Length: 127
Image 1 (tube, rainbow, N blue to C red):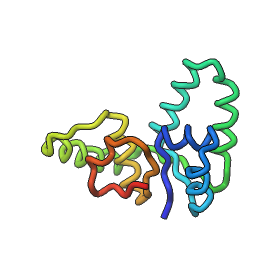
Image 2: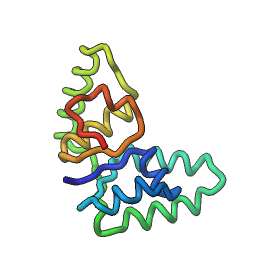
Image 3: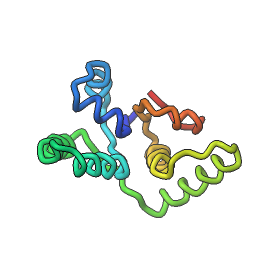
């Protein structure tokens, strides 16, 4: 199974968290949802180490094991179903997290995250 990284998981990976590094190294493939990459770059733009962080991210994304998950028409269908499910459950989550979950579900990945919002999506495999 592919392992998708949430923003907080990538940050821990980049910061040297050994547990996260081990999970990433054991994964056959790594998936990076576009909203995660956007959130990371937004953080870089606000921080003081933007160029360094961008360089590290670019090297990571250029790895043969890393795949960028981009939105397409199928993603919009998964997103709509997930959005409606969360609304009916009375458990909405931030919009970027809905996009991340939709991409992860569409591409049949497990999501490495430390964000409890994703617990509201029971069909999502979390690590």
